[in-house]
Image (cartoon, rainbow, N blue to C red; front, side, top):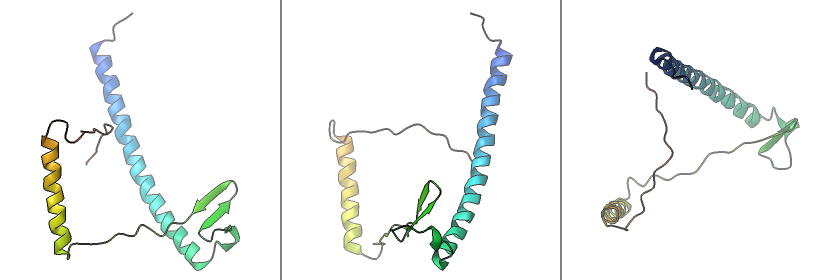
Length: 119
């Protein structure tokens, strides 16, 4: 087996890094474009311009072999004005910290490794 010269290895590693950064840049651009198209799609859907593609479920469209379902968004609640709930959340947070410090108290879970990119 032939050893890879250090210079070639470093260049290869730098190529991987550059490829990653370029793909992340392209993904950000695509995500932006997709968001704009989704906003336009939602507008067309709300105006009834896509009614000919609707299926039995009023929030779904069938286009070729693809089924697209519109979701109105998740309902959330803001409890910032509820002092009793804030107090209970603080108690729960303290209890969690206690159980994290106890051996065999809380089971530590570590997620998948990932990269972040900031420019």
